[in-house]
Image 1 (spheres, helix red, strand yellow):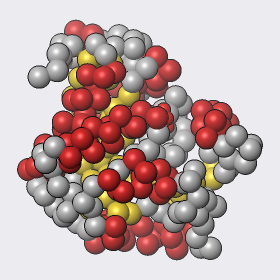
Image 2 (cartoon, protein in one colour; image 1 turned 90 degrees about the vertical axis):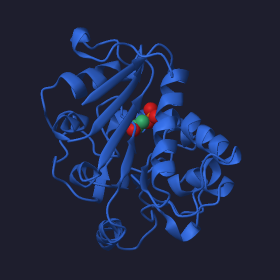
Image 3 (cartoon, protein in one colour; image 1 turned 30 degrees about the vertical axis):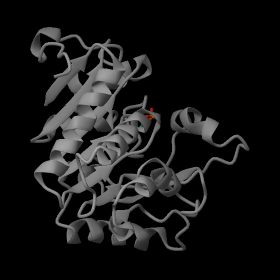
Image 4 (cartoon, protein in one colour; image 1 turned 120 degrees about the vertical axis):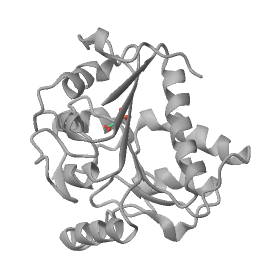
Length: 253
Ligand code: PGA
Protein backbone atom coordinates (compact mmCIF):
# COMPACT_ATOMS: atom_id res chain seq x y z
CA UNK A 1 0.00 0.00 0.00
CA UNK A 2 1.32 3.41 -0.93
CA UNK A 3 0.28 6.06 1.58
CA UNK A 4 0.74 9.69 0.58
CA UNK A 5 0.06 12.35 3.16
CA UNK A 6 -0.33 15.97 2.13
CA UNK A 7 -0.52 18.92 4.47
CA UNK A 8 -3.80 20.17 3.01
CA UNK A 9 -6.90 18.62 1.47
CA UNK A 10 -6.40 20.80 -1.59
CA UNK A 11 -2.99 19.26 -2.26
CA UNK A 12 -4.37 15.76 -1.71
CA UNK A 13 -7.10 16.49 -4.27
CA UNK A 14 -4.66 17.92 -6.80
CA UNK A 15 -2.47 14.84 -6.52
CA UNK A 16 -5.38 12.40 -6.79
CA UNK A 17 -6.80 14.20 -9.82
CA UNK A 18 -3.38 14.16 -11.41
CA UNK A 19 -3.11 10.39 -11.02
CA UNK A 20 -6.45 10.02 -12.83
CA UNK A 21 -5.40 12.44 -15.58
CA UNK A 22 -2.14 10.53 -16.03
CA UNK A 23 -4.06 7.26 -16.30
CA UNK A 24 -6.23 8.65 -19.09
CA UNK A 25 -3.26 10.26 -20.83
CA UNK A 26 -1.39 6.96 -20.76
CA UNK A 27 -4.39 4.99 -22.04
CA UNK A 28 -7.14 6.93 -23.73
CA UNK A 29 -9.49 3.97 -23.53
CA UNK A 30 -9.08 3.47 -19.79
CA UNK A 31 -11.86 1.94 -17.75
CA UNK A 32 -12.30 4.15 -14.70
CA UNK A 33 -14.16 3.18 -11.55
CA UNK A 34 -15.73 6.33 -10.12
CA UNK A 35 -17.06 7.32 -6.72
CA UNK A 36 -19.45 9.94 -5.40
CA UNK A 37 -19.59 11.81 -2.10
CA UNK A 38 -18.49 15.20 -0.87
CA UNK A 39 -14.81 14.22 -0.99
CA UNK A 40 -15.02 13.67 -4.74
CA UNK A 41 -16.65 16.98 -5.69
CA UNK A 42 -13.31 18.80 -6.13
CA UNK A 43 -11.91 15.78 -8.02
CA UNK A 44 -14.56 16.19 -10.72
CA UNK A 45 -13.95 19.93 -10.79
CA UNK A 46 -10.28 19.18 -11.46
CA UNK A 47 -11.13 16.65 -14.19
CA UNK A 48 -13.46 19.16 -15.87
CA UNK A 49 -10.67 21.71 -15.76
CA UNK A 50 -8.18 19.24 -17.24
CA UNK A 51 -10.64 18.54 -20.05
CA UNK A 52 -11.24 22.23 -20.72
CA UNK A 53 -7.49 22.82 -20.79
CA UNK A 54 -7.13 20.13 -23.44
CA UNK A 55 -5.06 17.87 -21.20
CA UNK A 56 -7.39 14.89 -21.51
CA UNK A 57 -10.20 13.53 -23.63
CA UNK A 58 -12.84 11.16 -22.31
CA UNK A 59 -13.93 10.16 -25.81
CA UNK A 60 -12.71 6.58 -25.41
CA UNK A 61 -13.02 6.32 -21.63
CA UNK A 62 -15.47 3.90 -20.01
CA UNK A 63 -16.70 4.47 -16.46
CA UNK A 64 -18.35 2.35 -13.79
CA UNK A 65 -19.55 4.00 -10.60
CA UNK A 66 -19.39 2.16 -7.32
CA UNK A 67 -22.99 2.40 -6.28
CA UNK A 68 -26.50 3.81 -6.55
CA UNK A 69 -29.40 4.23 -4.15
CA UNK A 70 -31.99 1.53 -4.57
CA UNK A 71 -35.35 2.96 -5.58
CA UNK A 72 -34.11 6.24 -7.08
CA UNK A 73 -34.58 6.65 -10.81
CA UNK A 74 -31.58 7.89 -12.81
CA UNK A 75 -33.50 11.13 -13.39
CA UNK A 76 -33.93 11.78 -9.67
CA UNK A 77 -31.57 14.68 -8.86
CA UNK A 78 -30.49 12.89 -5.67
CA UNK A 79 -29.41 9.79 -7.57
CA UNK A 80 -25.73 9.17 -8.11
CA UNK A 81 -26.45 9.00 -11.87
CA UNK A 82 -27.75 12.57 -11.76
CA UNK A 83 -24.82 13.60 -9.56
CA UNK A 84 -22.32 12.18 -12.04
CA UNK A 85 -24.07 13.88 -14.96
CA UNK A 86 -23.94 17.22 -13.14
CA UNK A 87 -20.39 16.90 -11.87
CA UNK A 88 -18.64 15.30 -14.83
CA UNK A 89 -20.45 13.59 -17.69
CA UNK A 90 -22.43 16.60 -18.93
CA UNK A 91 -19.25 18.68 -19.16
CA UNK A 92 -16.84 16.43 -21.03
CA UNK A 93 -16.68 14.51 -24.31
CA UNK A 94 -17.55 11.14 -22.79
CA UNK A 95 -19.82 8.81 -24.77
CA UNK A 96 -22.98 8.46 -22.61
CA UNK A 97 -23.18 4.79 -23.60
CA UNK A 98 -19.82 4.23 -21.91
CA UNK A 99 -20.94 5.63 -18.54
CA UNK A 100 -22.30 3.02 -16.18
CA UNK A 101 -24.04 3.09 -12.83
CA UNK A 102 -26.36 0.51 -11.34
CA UNK A 103 -29.96 1.46 -12.19
CA UNK A 104 -31.56 2.36 -8.88
CA UNK A 105 -35.20 1.90 -9.82
CA UNK A 106 -34.73 -1.50 -11.39
CA UNK A 107 -37.64 -3.89 -10.86
CA UNK A 108 -35.15 -6.74 -10.37
CA UNK A 109 -32.13 -5.70 -8.28
CA UNK A 110 -30.56 -9.15 -8.42
CA UNK A 111 -30.62 -9.19 -12.20
CA UNK A 112 -29.36 -5.61 -12.27
CA UNK A 113 -26.43 -6.56 -10.05
CA UNK A 114 -25.57 -9.48 -12.33
CA UNK A 115 -25.87 -7.24 -15.39
CA UNK A 116 -23.48 -4.75 -13.79
CA UNK A 117 -20.88 -7.39 -13.01
CA UNK A 118 -21.13 -8.69 -16.57
CA UNK A 119 -20.73 -5.19 -18.00
CA UNK A 120 -17.55 -4.63 -16.00
CA UNK A 121 -16.16 -7.95 -17.22
CA UNK A 122 -17.16 -7.18 -20.82
CA UNK A 123 -15.26 -3.89 -20.60
CA UNK A 124 -12.14 -5.83 -19.63
CA UNK A 125 -12.23 -4.92 -15.94
CA UNK A 126 -11.43 -1.64 -14.22
CA UNK A 127 -8.02 -0.04 -14.69
CA UNK A 128 -8.26 2.58 -11.96
CA UNK A 129 -10.87 2.52 -9.20
CA UNK A 130 -11.37 5.77 -7.32
CA UNK A 131 -12.53 5.21 -3.74
CA UNK A 132 -13.73 7.33 -0.89
CA UNK A 133 -14.17 5.90 2.58
CA UNK A 134 -17.07 6.10 5.00
CA UNK A 135 -16.59 7.11 8.60
CA UNK A 136 -17.38 3.48 9.38
CA UNK A 137 -14.78 2.14 6.95
CA UNK A 138 -17.12 1.33 4.08
CA UNK A 139 -16.00 1.38 0.45
CA UNK A 140 -18.79 1.80 -2.04
CA UNK A 141 -21.76 0.95 0.16
CA UNK A 142 -20.05 -2.14 1.53
CA UNK A 143 -20.87 -1.51 5.14
CA UNK A 144 -18.97 -3.13 8.04
CA UNK A 145 -19.09 -6.93 8.05
CA UNK A 146 -19.62 -7.04 4.31
CA UNK A 147 -18.02 -10.15 2.90
CA UNK A 148 -14.57 -9.30 1.64
CA UNK A 149 -15.25 -11.43 -1.45
CA UNK A 150 -18.70 -9.96 -2.17
CA UNK A 151 -19.94 -9.06 -5.63
CA UNK A 152 -22.36 -6.35 -6.78
CA UNK A 153 -25.55 -6.70 -4.76
CA UNK A 154 -28.08 -4.91 -2.57
CA UNK A 155 -26.82 -3.73 0.80
CA UNK A 156 -28.75 -2.16 3.67
CA UNK A 157 -27.30 1.20 4.68
CA UNK A 158 -26.20 1.46 8.30
CA UNK A 159 -27.56 4.18 10.59
CA UNK A 160 -24.15 5.89 10.50
CA UNK A 161 -24.13 6.07 6.71
CA UNK A 162 -27.74 7.24 6.63
CA UNK A 163 -26.89 9.96 9.15
CA UNK A 164 -23.82 11.03 7.16
CA UNK A 165 -25.87 11.44 3.96
CA UNK A 166 -29.19 12.55 5.46
CA UNK A 167 -28.66 16.17 4.44
CA UNK A 168 -29.07 15.16 0.79
CA UNK A 169 -32.60 14.01 1.69
CA UNK A 170 -34.22 16.89 3.58
CA UNK A 171 -37.68 15.29 3.29
CA UNK A 172 -36.48 12.41 5.44
CA UNK A 173 -36.99 9.94 2.61
CA UNK A 174 -33.47 8.64 2.31
CA UNK A 175 -33.32 5.18 0.76
CA UNK A 176 -32.54 2.34 3.13
CA UNK A 177 -30.77 0.20 0.54
CA UNK A 178 -28.24 0.62 -2.23
CA UNK A 179 -26.85 -1.40 -5.11
CA UNK A 180 -23.10 -1.48 -4.70
CA UNK A 181 -20.13 -3.12 -6.31
CA UNK A 182 -18.91 -5.81 -3.94
CA UNK A 183 -15.63 -5.74 -2.09
CA UNK A 184 -14.44 -8.55 -4.33
CA UNK A 185 -15.46 -6.57 -7.40
CA UNK A 186 -13.48 -3.56 -6.19
CA UNK A 187 -10.46 -5.72 -5.42
CA UNK A 188 -10.28 -6.82 -9.07
CA UNK A 189 -9.52 -3.27 -10.21
CA UNK A 190 -5.93 -3.09 -11.38
CA UNK A 191 -5.24 0.01 -9.28
CA UNK A 192 -7.26 1.19 -6.29
CA UNK A 193 -6.90 4.90 -5.53
CA UNK A 194 -8.43 6.03 -2.25
CA UNK A 195 -8.83 9.67 -1.26
CA UNK A 196 -9.74 10.63 2.30
CA UNK A 197 -9.71 14.13 3.72
CA UNK A 198 -10.79 15.64 7.03
CA UNK A 199 -10.70 14.52 10.65
CA UNK A 200 -14.01 12.60 10.47
CA UNK A 201 -12.20 9.95 8.43
CA UNK A 202 -9.16 9.59 10.70
CA UNK A 203 -10.35 6.52 12.65
CA UNK A 204 -11.49 4.67 9.50
CA UNK A 205 -8.23 5.54 7.74
CA UNK A 206 -6.15 4.22 10.64
CA UNK A 207 -8.18 0.99 10.68
CA UNK A 208 -7.75 0.68 6.91
CA UNK A 209 -4.00 1.14 6.84
CA UNK A 210 -2.81 -0.24 10.18
CA UNK A 211 -5.36 -3.00 10.48
CA UNK A 212 -6.22 -5.58 11.47
CA UNK A 213 -7.53 -6.84 8.14
CA UNK A 214 -11.18 -7.26 8.99
CA UNK A 215 -14.65 -7.12 7.50
CA UNK A 216 -15.42 -4.83 10.44
CA UNK A 217 -13.56 -2.23 8.34
CA UNK A 218 -14.16 -3.27 4.72
CA UNK A 219 -11.57 -0.78 3.43
CA UNK A 220 -8.86 -2.72 5.30
CA UNK A 221 -9.07 -5.28 2.48
CA UNK A 222 -6.88 -2.87 0.51
CA UNK A 223 -3.99 -4.31 2.56
CA UNK A 224 -4.36 -7.33 0.27
CA UNK A 225 -4.44 -5.36 -2.98
CA UNK A 226 -1.41 -5.53 -5.22
CA UNK A 227 -1.61 -1.86 -6.13
CA UNK A 228 -3.40 0.41 -3.70
CA UNK A 229 -2.65 4.10 -3.29
CA UNK A 230 -4.14 5.99 -0.35
CA UNK A 231 -4.00 9.78 -0.56
CA UNK A 232 -4.65 11.67 2.67
CA UNK A 233 -4.54 15.10 4.10
CA UNK A 234 -2.95 15.60 7.47
CA UNK A 235 -6.22 15.49 9.39
CA UNK A 236 -7.40 12.23 7.79
CA UNK A 237 -3.98 10.78 8.65
CA UNK A 238 -4.22 12.05 12.23
CA UNK A 239 -4.84 8.70 13.91
CA UNK A 240 -2.07 6.77 12.15
CA UNK A 241 0.67 5.57 14.45
CA UNK A 242 3.39 4.15 12.22
CA UNK A 243 4.49 7.50 10.87
CA UNK A 244 8.05 6.42 10.23
CA UNK A 245 6.79 3.79 7.80
CA UNK A 246 5.04 6.11 5.38
CA UNK A 247 6.38 8.08 2.51
CA UNK A 248 7.29 11.43 3.96
CA UNK A 249 4.61 14.04 3.79
CA UNK A 250 4.86 14.98 0.16
CA UNK A 251 4.61 18.44 -1.22
CA UNK A 252 2.71 18.62 -4.44
CA UNK A 253 4.96 18.26 -7.43
P1 PGA B 1 -18.00 11.44 1.60
O1 PGA B 1 -18.38 9.91 1.37
O2 PGA B 1 -16.97 11.78 0.58
O3 PGA B 1 -19.28 12.17 1.38
O4 PGA B 1 -17.48 11.55 2.98
C1 PGA B 1 -17.37 8.96 1.27
C2 PGA B 1 -17.95 7.57 1.32
O5 PGA B 1 -18.94 7.37 2.05
O6 PGA B 1 -17.39 6.68 0.67
